Every structure is written in C-alpha cells, then in structure tokens.
Image (cartoon, rainbow, N blue to C red; front, side, top):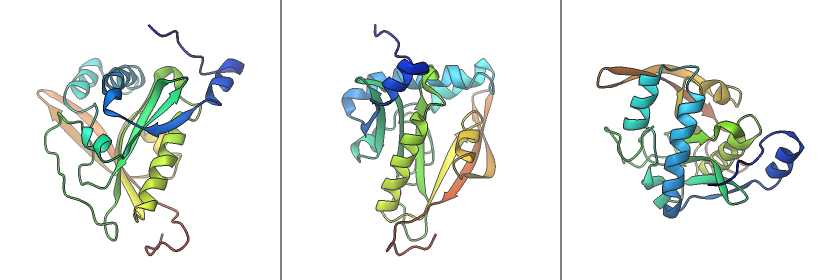
Length: 202
C-alpha cells in the first residue's frame, strides 16, 4: 500500500510542483481501473445515489484502451503515483469504456467535427488543486494540434461545473439506462482558441 500523498497545505504544494502529465501505458490499466472506481464513488456521491454510481462503474466508467493505443490518453503522476487521468479522441464515441455498448469508431473530420474529451477522473483527495485543469489543457492542445477547432464531452453532474468554469457550454441532457437504473449526464461543447495559422476559424 502506498501512503497517501498530501494534496493541500505546504506539503501538498510541494507535491503539486512534482506533477507530471504523460501518456498512459497499457501497464497503467490496473491502476487506472482502481483510480476510476474510487474517484467515481467519492466525487459522484453528492449527485447520484449509490445504485446509479454502481451502475455507471459497471457499465460505462473505465479505461478505453483505444485511447491508450492511439496515444490520446494521459495520466497525472506525482512521485510515480497516478492521481488523475483523461484523454481526447479523434473518434466518434463520446463516452464509455471498452465494456460500454454503442461505441462508434468512425474517425472524425477536424474540418467539421468536434474532437472528444474523454474519461476524466481525479483522485478524490486531489481535487481543486489543478490536476484536472492540467490534464484538460494537455488534451485541448493535442486536439488543436490535430486540426480540431472545438471539443465535445459527456459530463457527469459532478463534473459539469468543472467544465463550465473552463469554457464548456451545456448543449443537452442525456439519460443512460443500465438495467432498471437511469444515470443522467450533460453533453457539453467548447470552441477552442486555435493556434495562429490553423485553417479552422474559432
């Protein structure tokens, strides 16, 4: 067992100075699965009942290995510990792990489509210190570099305020049914500030 790293206070600031964002590897998947389950259980508890959280973890939350294979999924590490994860995608699937139904592997056209922001999770004791923002900036920059002018995502109710504070606008509600359990999400979109010389206007 790892001892918990301090996320706040002077020791936490020292740890944040050691934050590294890098590409996720297949070897990270077991640790990512544990992080995602813990994060969802902790951070979603104010917005969803336990049955909804359990259903989402079982049916939709988790690692999308396509993102790892295509070098589009990132992890946030402090002292080699993964404390957050998130990615972007040039494929049409908007949310859901490998186990999710209804995946769509159609490649998006940067000239007309929104890149996808995918599968963001942060350890419950590392929220509000900049981990999610660092991951999001990395993903948005990668999408811009690939020619995309906008991004789209499916947010949990707990995650929607984070994205709204970073320029995302709600464009619709989505209710997913898993057995007898309904889980509500919020579709959101953002127009990116493009790099000079990018052919697509912001």
